[in-house]
Length: 182
Image (tube, rainbow, N blue to C red; front, side):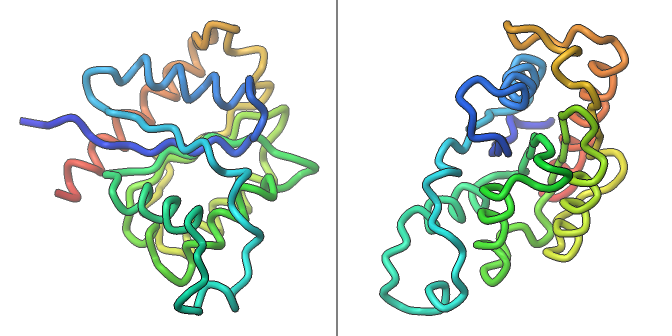
């Protein structure tokens, strides 16, 4: 019997009412009986990554410790991000950089949805980063949703049938990964 999975959701956009946050909220609705989703909301508060600070004992990087704990204590991670200027949003890349030495993403099931106008370049770059840090991600747990704003409404309901099916496939695959991990 499967139990409720603890998922931490990271929105790559720091905008208060971003399209990507709408997709996360849609996923929360679709997984009410499967997942307990916590949205990590402190992305913009993380300090700029500095490897020198990462290796000092008394660095007092509370935000970094909290972020790492969110990842560590979850069964899986859901990342939903836009593409900014053909790349990964700086705040998202910064957050991931803070986990390189501490390995929170190593073998952690991860789903990646790039929801943007195009998204291809940021998606590919982020996939490479996630693979380097050994995240458990594959073709079943990642997707690009191009023209994302046209496929979801203001109430966080996915209105495009093909997009909803893609998201449901990712939900099923990530759920299966979390069950296999335990």
